[in-house]
Image 1 (cartoon, rainbow, N blue to C red):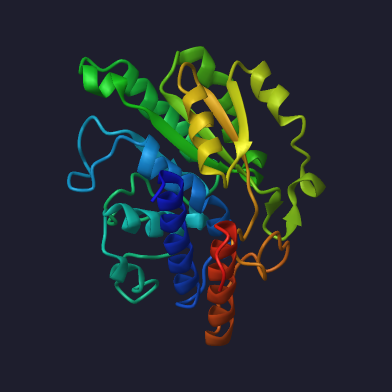
Image 2: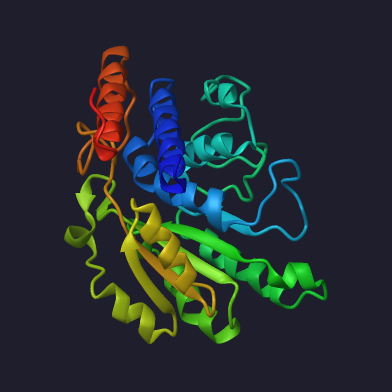
Length: 280
């Protein structure tokens, strides 16, 4: 099996888990589905992490700033071996730890995000500490922060974007999940972001644009990041993989009924098979 196919299979299983969580109390399923491939690429090829020792001192750090998409993170952490898949099915159970925003009780989760705009300042602080560490392994570790494009409305994000290239020579990569929808509206209808690339470059960032659902393209894009503070603008589809949810402006929060869950899982399997030229 090719590496791309193996990654796609992991992404399919993660999306299926997200849908299962949406039937257990509901979740922000569209935002979660749009970033699954990015998370699979990170955890299976880019991040230097260890599921057996998730607090390894010299690990790379990943912060999910768009915390409402955490079902995708939980699902990919399960695929990577940080937790059992069965634990995902305790989503929103009383006294459980799998809930709507990142919870540090889950192995591999670094920060309780949720209120938008927090993780880039936090990530910048972590990157600065590591850049100044006396420990060579810590100095070589990388910090990755994933933002939603709607999150770019937050002033704290732009403050960090302005100052980071002045303080760091490398070690910080920002991934923007550019699905072009926030809550129940198109991003450009609320606060237009374009020309986004030129704004970021004017602040001193290396900017790389790519297809956020194409694993070979993602691998090439990450190879271009890292030499200095970098932003990866990943064009994605909200609700990716599920026809009924894909690029849907309304219904950003989904509590799937049993009938809807069956439909969504069927559509997900069909899209996965179609991507590899398989017959149902």
